[in-house]
Image (cartoon, rainbow, N blue to C red; front, side, top):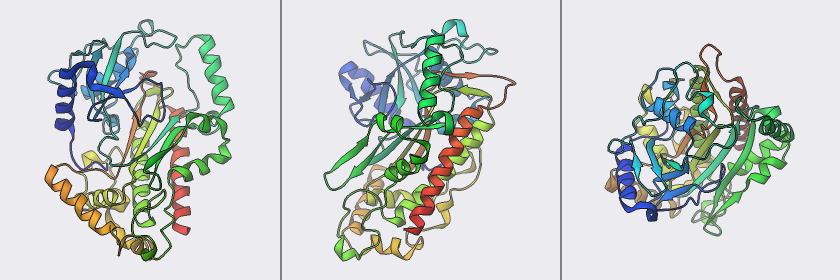
Length: 396
């Protein structure tokens, strides 16, 4: 996995501070690119608060118990710190460590018995899940949310909702490919803000247009093939080739590890999403990649695939001559040194990318039924799209 350090104590401290401050400590999450609206973030951005459902809470609780049936998924799931009621009080968090809560779990039927979960949108409890915001450690996060699977409805859904979700899958890329681009954002240096591509884009495109969407999320900087004297600092959107390629290769490696983890578990995960975040800040991305290369993660942190990230043997300067030229002879090198100094001072390292799965409101155990082929198809499509973009960048 790409994350070089355990951020649990840092996030736990933020959780304690946020809870002490109450509701005033939270505001709308500015980096949300998919999912239901209304997600909140803590004042420092390290936590998110989202409306909670019983089945999703039970999933997080089983994961925290290190239940062997879903333990392979743990490296790919944001940390869970308990639940908040509307008045801002945390319940059953045991000093805000990511530990089990109190929702009942039916061992035989899955995360929650069908009778406990409402068929319609189940956001009725008045409780909110308190979760790690995996994008908070990034300076300029590029974020992609991909809805996974050809099946977007829970088997307990009302007939009307099931029919609606079947139509949605048919009318979008979901049924054919197992993926839908829910939304993404890419940082633009020209205006100092993120360029956001909304949910409507992913619903409007055809399967043949998915590569263009991935191309937009992984743009190659226009300065990649010009003399550095003409580009004294980052401009426009995208990373130079020497940064973009190792980041993309690492993302593919983590996605492959995630696929292996899901293939080893017997769950159904309708409407689950893949969340990909990578650093758009050139200096921070460079420093993060150097951290990954200098201190490879132990086997336990590499996911179910247990293979090192491909970039581990590829320094930034060795990727290509053009990639090397992208980064030298500009103010960029000083920025890298500043970023590294900041990391040392703060004793906190920043990953150049993360790959996670989110949205478990319709996730359940299905002992004896094998893995979720619907979701695996979506991951296979995603991996193919990412690998296709890597080949394009190598040739550009």
